[in-house]
Image (cartoon, rainbow, N blue to C red):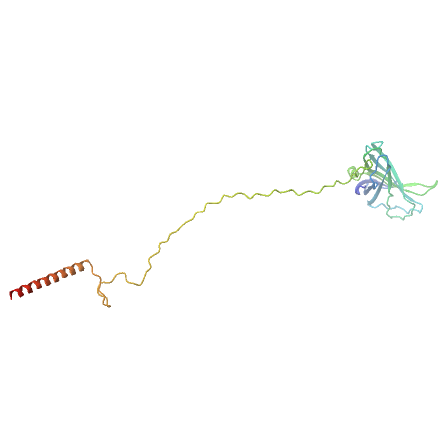
Length: 266
């Protein structure tokens, strides 16, 4: 288990006689044990101070016997601990190594040991630190401060804290919550809306056939046609013809009567 490295702003004094209140930005990297700890087990965490900006450099050359060391404060809190809140000083010293003036210096990683007595969460929060140079061993060894830093933004230090979960043996490991696969919602079948048919209006149009026009003459013109056909007799002409026929008939009858009388006399 580990906390994601976080940037924390600090205010530092450079050396023992150098400028003070210089802003620095360090990346705090805290990691815990890989396995989930159980009550009464010793838990070891690692605290690294990485990538300072601006870079920490040696103000003078460092002999081969020189050792870079760091001493830091850490706040340890949690119910599983014998003391729910503790401010502890942790330190670390790097192997002896020489360095030239202006060479970047990296603080050695520090180890933090806690022993929880019950289940619960333990929080390790980084605080201020002092980076110094140990000139060697023996009676002539001296410590020279390089940087003395305090946290400028407490909220950033809290965000960089490492949380260690202590559980009973066999308990499921506490980790990122897993989201079960989501079942797509079942959509009920949609019933098509009932539509009322609109009344159908049927229009019937009756068309009367017009008489077919022919080339025949509907009315015989007055007078006789050149083909010899007689014209149509009107009502007055029929009366005259009928009267003429009667006169001819009477004349014939009268002639017969006269002939008979003449034959009788002779």
